[in-house]
Amino acid sequence: MKIKYRDLLEKKSNNRKAVLVTAYDYSTASVIEKCRIDIVLVGDSASMTMLGNRSTLEITLDEMITFSKGVRKAIKSPYMIVDMPFMSYQPSKRDAIKNCGRVMKETRCDAVKMEGGRELIDRIKAVIDSGIPVCGHIGMKPQSYKKYGGYPVMGFNEEEAIQIIMDGETLEKAGVEMIIIENTVDLVTKYLKENLRIPVYSIGSGTQSDGQIVVLNDILGLYSDFTPRFIDRYAQLSKVIEDAVNRYSDDVVKSKFPKKKKIPRMAKANFMKMLEKLEAVKQNKR
Ligand code: KIV
Image 1: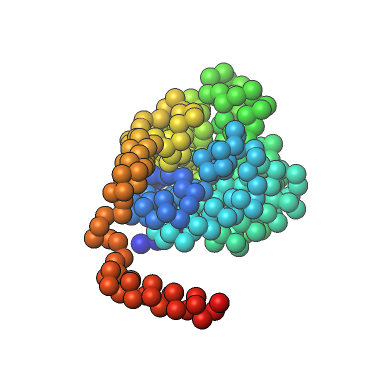
Image 2: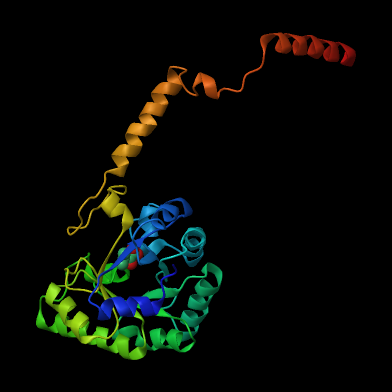
């Protein structure tokens, strides 16, 4: 059954956790579709997981749309959100509306995600006012990592905690549907969960939230250049893939692949007859 926004609100009011993961392609999303997942995010983390870039800053709007179209074809039940890439909405209200609108139209997602708090509220509100559902993203915002000089945990000092709480409250007032809070101390997350009407989902910000989101590859052990501190590995897919590909390689080298019964076979006599005919055809052409 298709999960609607009101189902997510209901979950929050019944104190039931929502489960969110990222997905970036049709094959993986087809598996996710069969899992107990409420929301799928096509994150701009695709910049690293799919394109091998060093950060989220490099991915383009066109690339995000291509990945999202594949995911959309597989995702029927979960609510689907697409991340707006760096500089697709920051420059102006006009850019924000145009690009978020393009993502909604071309990917048929349920909402877009925009990183930012009060500093970008006019652009976020302009998008909401044009009829586009928005998921906010506050706390440590990866698109600003150059400004922070890395990916710090935030909210330890009073000033930062106040900023993040006020960002959350301002976003709710502007009309965002939900908020993702990243790398922030747990009591700030708890405060927002308890004081906002909209769901607050955590990534690296403790358990006292309305749900959790992770980069799928991190929990599957698939992309291992960098693993965030809060991640638990639920599988080691890189190892599974490596073993499988090496077994395939060995079989090819030993002519054991494909298996005899899977080889398209022709009777030797028919083949010899065909060779005679081939010779005749060649003679006629000479
Ligand atoms: O891009 C991403 O994957 C995210 C996280 C919140 C999961 O924004």
